[in-house]
Length: 110
Image 1 (cartoon, rainbow, N blue to C red):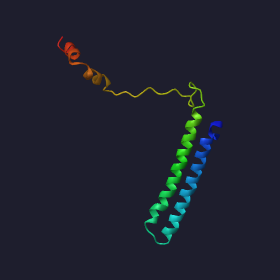
Image 2: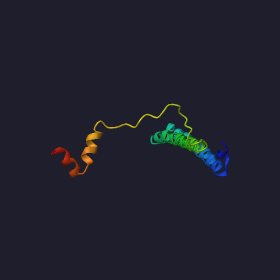
Image 3: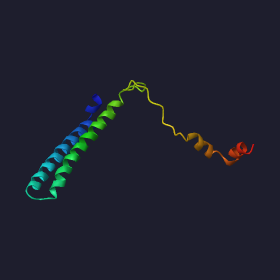
Image 4: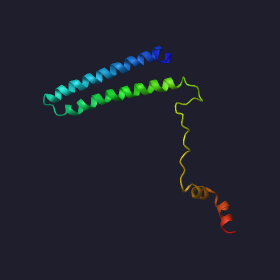
């Protein structure tokens, strides 16, 4: 948790807060313009809050990735085992087709 209180992270926190507030204020401004009769501002009134949500989502994602570095390598958050990778039902035929022509011709002419 201390990792999020280093000077670069404090700058990032401030930047995220400033951007989120600025996008919210710009959305409010566009909403007042739209209510005043400017039809194009309706789109911007919806767009600016989406930018604010996107900023918060990226901010939270970056913090989670940074905190994940503190975990030991073997420790995972999930207790369930990972499922096996998906395979194609045609995997055997695909691998057979990728073999060299000499390998596949030896088996078919025997």
